[in-house]
Length: 177
Image 1 (cartoon, rainbow, N blue to C red):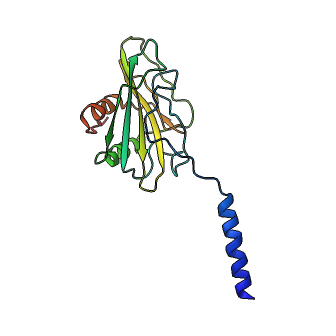
Image 2: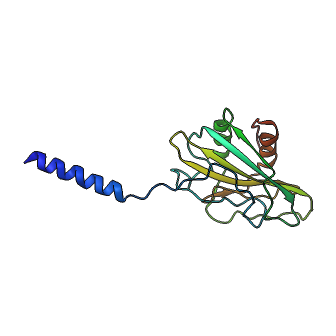
Image 3: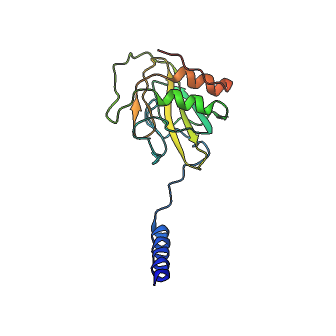
């Protein structure tokens, strides 16, 4: 009798596991165009990674793919991919620094000057050892007026210069406030 109950429990578990939705995969390549209409504040997909509703980059990712989309801040949106760089040994440090930034689920607007100039939108794909991943979108621009987001939470803390350095040199260095 006990073996019948165990068999039924195993079968029920298999049926439920077969019905569970597959986790949404985050593409492991850079989108060819910036899909947002502004400066920073865009990601291709908000992904359900534990802690993404409390921190820009939760946990300990093992790799960070930085995608750069250069343009001008007077006509943002739709920039073509300018290049990419993958960080491995710097990914955990980068994630830790971004994780400590203050975040909100509400609007992260602020007062910005209106100086025109070059800007580069960035997407960073953080990959985790378990196969999960999440995107963070931000930018470097002349006014330092950027929202950084993972699609769920956002911050007004400016990380544009650090992203440009990481993209160009492969080294993450964030200035402390």
